Length: 231
Image 1 (cartoon, rainbow, N blue to C red):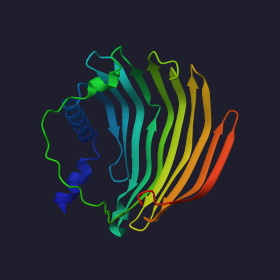
Image 2 (cartoon, rainbow, N blue to C red):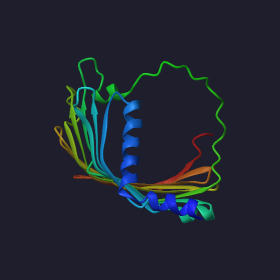
Image 3 (tube, one colour):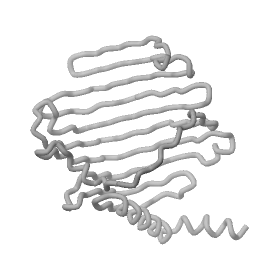
């Protein structure tokens, strides 16, 4: 019993969370052509985990991504009944700084380290996940995207970006709903007040249960059935 209790207690300590944070940063920085920094990792790891003040910068130390908080709340006990339950997965106040250069490449592309190793392609097996997955909320709140490029069609800034998604998967059905998708775009200006989409799939037929698109000037609502697009 001691062999189980000691690790469970140790993982709750600030020291162990600091070790975990340093290890995550070390692994990430070996995989990108830039720098990842994290202020701290919080949570009890049995029900939740939260990463505070995440920043990603390129090789020139220009910040590409900032996230105030990234968190996950879950139920480990549901594994005993054959289900993965995510109560809440959230990104709070993410800020992305995008810049397109004269050669049409983007600044975030420089983060990718080219892998010249050839990997032998293997035949993929049909997707058959035996465990159910319940996702109560995936949410992004107060997002901001700053864009520098010469294309007049692409907004120079997107702010107040909010997204909320829920989903359920089992071997007999798939349910997914975009509960909220809103943003304000600047230069050119456009406001998406909300986009709602709800679909379900019984692995034979897709059904669109709800579609609602609301802008500053229009409201469009649609519902209906769609046959399996693969056949």
